[in-house]
Amino acid sequence: AETDEERIEHLIRIRDLQAQKPNGAYGFLAFIPWPFQSTGTRLEREMNIPGRINTQDYLRMIAVSRIMLPNVPNIQASWLTVGISAGLTALYAGANDLGSIMIEENVVSAAGATHVMDERGMQDAIRRAGFIPRRRNQKYEDEG
Image 1 (tube, rainbow, N blue to C red):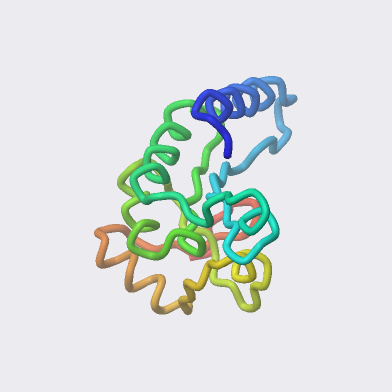
Image 2 (cartoon, rainbow, N blue to C red):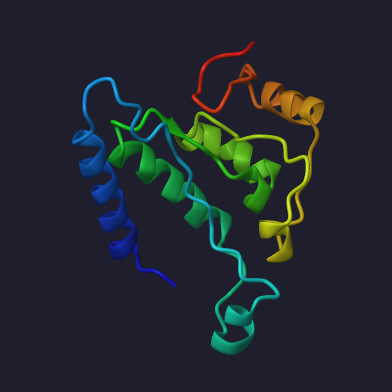
């Protein structure tokens, strides 16, 4: 598992690299701090690496990412890996995006993520949390 120091070093490198992008270039449109998923993997079996992080650590990473990356416009919460409740709480910790609805997802689900939601369910959850859902494209352009 990575240390807190390694996480901060990673954020500093992203921030510094983003600062070097040419004017007019997209650069990093978003940072998505996905928690490592090892459930059912060789890493979990052979190296005893835990399959989940706790919600408090995840929310702290979201908040620190927002503070450390002022030049990256979007911080995405990974509701798929942490669940919708933690994902919605991450909106209050500095995330401004919940990502997308997965039509077919096989990577993180194979490593233990079991959260699913359709478009209407996500929009309703966002409203219940006190936010206004918006549809966007991959360039983070508003689509309504």
